[in-house]
Image 1 (cartoon, rainbow, N blue to C red):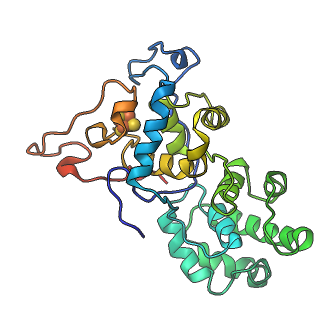
Image 2: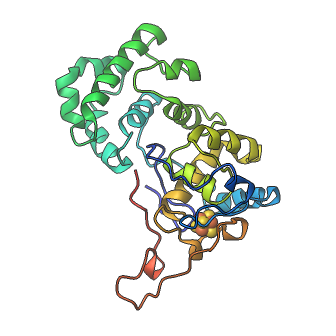
Image 3: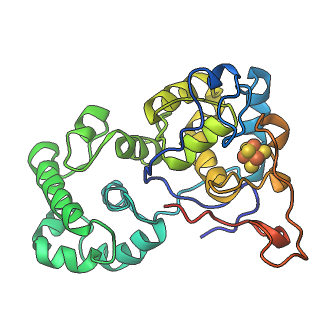
Length: 275
Ligand code: SF4
């Protein structure tokens, strides 16, 4: 685990919770519609490069919090992490991977033993079944290797577009964007990529992010959303990219002397607890 500051953090790669309906098509054109969600103009094109340059300066080599040592382990960890925290997945895979680090060994465990390793993770039963079915397909159709194409990845049981994007990006270094709950929120809230659904945000991000930042943008946005631009109340007063973000009104530091002061009191960066 690396240390993190207000910008760099270590965050989750996955987990799509229900997105916040911050933007509508009108809002994406800069029209304020919902007083409950103070909204903004879409981020100016000239602000996008410095936005990512700032994130990069704070964390030049962003990494995922999920622990893995092979593409198969990454795929497994991502598959297990839907609706769960990276911490809970790591806790389970630290015991699982030493005994099952290949599709063959994972299949050899069988359903009951596999479930014993991942029982602390939400939806473990369906995840165990999907993982074993995925291992079968990897062996039968891909020589025991994780395929590099989106189509082949999405054909695996339990693997959707987001999981495929995570594997393509983190394992194979492809410039794709896995939009999780954090990226969905940051894309909308900052005006970087307003969209009504994850796919819309994904496609806008791919279009707007300068190519030089695209491979790592996934990590930067997740980390930023997890530790700074958090769901409940963004920590604008300690945000390094506030100058480029059009979110209004910016939040201010809570009164540190007041009992029960809000998020970020004392200047500490904190996670919003989302997976
Ligand atoms: S200024 Fe606030 S809303 Fe904008 S990116 Fe930073 S934390 Fe998020």
